[in-house]
Length: 141
Ligand code: IDP
Ligand code: MG
Image 1: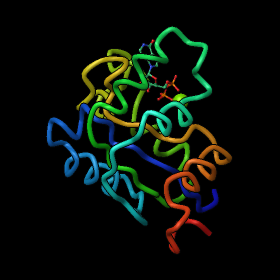
Image 2: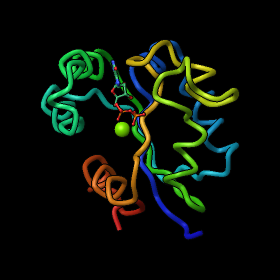
Image 3: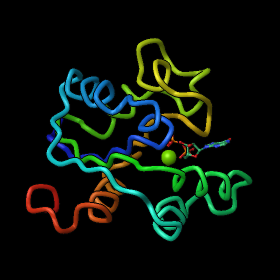
Image 4: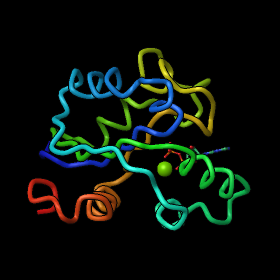
């Protein structure tokens, strides 16, 4: 498998419960390299654009409110098959359905406040990295 890059968000529920260090350690422990990371507060416009694919879903408004409710940690990750690997260690969207030992099983509160985001395809990873790290020499090439 090829070396890939993927994009991660540690969401407001996890940042608010002081889980940033534990989640970044989990990511590194799984063999994914953190190329860049920073804490940001998403604007309403950024959250709406980031989740635009879900705009017709009933949970969209709540999701945008939640994602702007506090700071998040955005990261650019690299490794063998990084997109699928990060999705695997994150676990299922609903923590009640997530496999044992996954980030969402360990740390998520519920299906909305589910601790982390990870890109679901290489193409989306490129777009999401560009969205948040366009000015970063290491990630944006
Ligand atoms: P993913 O984050 O596992 O890729 P998606 O289906 O892309 O899951 O949904 C994006 C985000 O929207 C989820 O991570 C979660 O925060 C929220 N979400 C998804 N489904 C629901 C739902 O049924 N109720 C409330 N929030 C949801
Ligand atoms: Mg998704």
